[in-house]
Image 1 (spheres, one colour):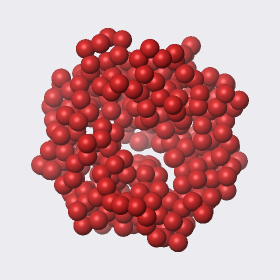
Image 2 (cartoon, rainbow, N blue to C red):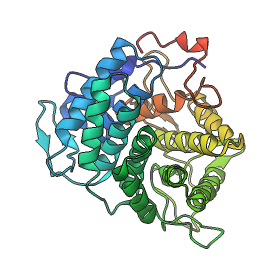
Image 3 (cartoon, rainbow, N blue to C red):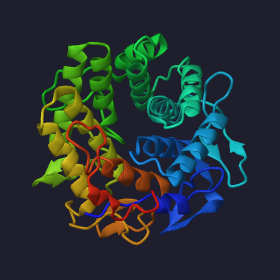
Image 4 (cartoon, rainbow, N blue to C red):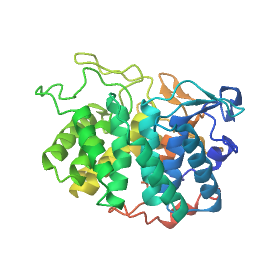
Length: 349
C-alpha cells in the first residue's frame, strides 16, 4: 500500500489553519476552521518521523492556531471563520481535550526546543481546567501522558490523569455491555486508551486492566469476518443490531491509537493485529471492499456509506488516515523507524 503524504493537508491549509470541510478535494473555505481538526493536525505533524520543512511549517501554523484559541483561564474556542475571526464561547469540550493532547504531544515530540517549551506552558495553562465530559477528559489525558513521560516529576499532568480515570470510569459489571456509557458514540477507543495510558504512567495495573478489557470488547464488537466494521455514526446501545453505515475514519484512527498503545504497554502482539486491521480498513479491507483514500490527492474519504465512500476529503478524515498510517511501517516497538517504502508517495511530507 502506498502511504499518503501531507499533500492534501497542505492544499486544505493556509496561514491560519486547516479548513474543516471539503467538496471532494476542494476546501470549503467559507465554512472556516475547527480547533478539533487543527489539534489533530499538530498531533500528526509532530508525530511524523521525518520532520521535513513542509511538516514543520504545518506544525507551526497549527500550534499558533491552538495558542490563539486558548483564553486566560485555559479554556478553548472551537470555531474560526475564513477571515480569522473567532466565534462562540471558550469551554472545556472536546476541543479543550484535543488541544491538551496536541500541546502534550508537541511538548514531548516537536523537533524545535522552542515549541516544546511553549507547548508545556500552554499545556499547564489548559490543564488547570477540568471537563465533565468523558471524551474531553480522555483526550486531555493522552496529552498528559506525553507530558508525564517527558517529565516524570510533572505533578499537574499526573493530577489530570488521576481525574481523567475517575471521569472515564470503570467497566460495568455486565459481560454483554461492559462499556462505561449507555451508548457507543464516536472515537470510542479513546476511552480505553486513556485508561491504559494513565494506568501505565501512574503504576495502576488495575486501571490498565480495565482499559484492556474495554478495548478487547470494543475491538471484538467492531470486527466482522476478519475486518473492521466500526460503530456507525449513529452510535449503538445494548440490544441494538450491529449497524454498518455510515462508518467514520475517526473511529478507525482511535482504534489504531488504542491498539498501538496496548501493544507498547503490554508487549502482547495480539494488539498489533488491531493496528493492522485499522490500516487494512483504509486499504480496502472493509465491509464494501473499497479503498478509503484518494491516491491522486492523498486525501481521506469522509466516510463509508452503504453505496461506497463519501468522496469528500475533509480535515478529520484525512488526518485520521495519516494518523493510522503513521503506524504502517514502524518497528514493532513503535520507535518510529520507517521502511524505505515510505519514500513512495510522501514527497510532500
